Image (cartoon, rainbow, N blue to C red; front, side, top):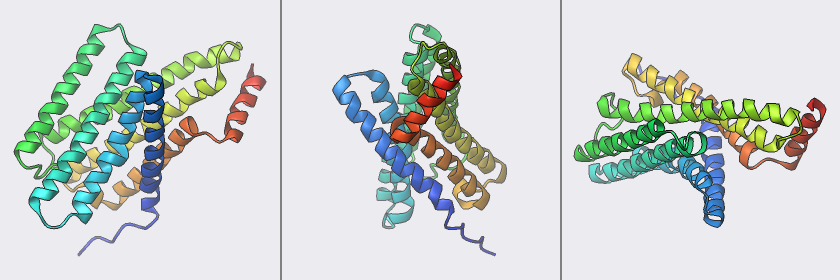
Length: 251
């Protein structure tokens, strides 16, 4: 018996994440072009690579491409490359922003880059066939993706906790402080959503996008990540005033 199709509301979270990530990533890359600063470049490229670009090429390959193995492989290859570059940029961001002087972290980033390149080359050698089948290449690159997201989330929340104390003493910017909280929530939601889907696929042997409850979980986590990114980088004026007002009350 065929499985029931997912509820249409499942796609709300995916659509929200796609649109917000596209807007935020594009804006940050434009900002990086003006400022020539690495953090904006890394976040923008990371958000776009893992989000709308990589995910978009995967969707085109699976849903819209004509029945041509060569074209399918090419689209998957571009998507995988975009995601790999996005993950690498998140590693670089975590290193340069939080631990710029630590050699071990630099070595970790170098190792992640080498592993991502190796998994892409291996998949390319197989024509990107079975790119989502559970194997060493899939597990390596998904572990790096999840690791980069959860590491970034933990660092942002740790930094938010430190800045929060400064804001209470009137020595910090409450909006910037809140931005670290939101970035931690958004990256954490994306990482947890990916982890749930990966563990479910390993346990069931069924691709995550074919399991209704996993789709619902991914959609919910995507919605949380989208809301957090939107408030962090494209906040309405009313939200900014609310953050500033609460900081004055707590000071």
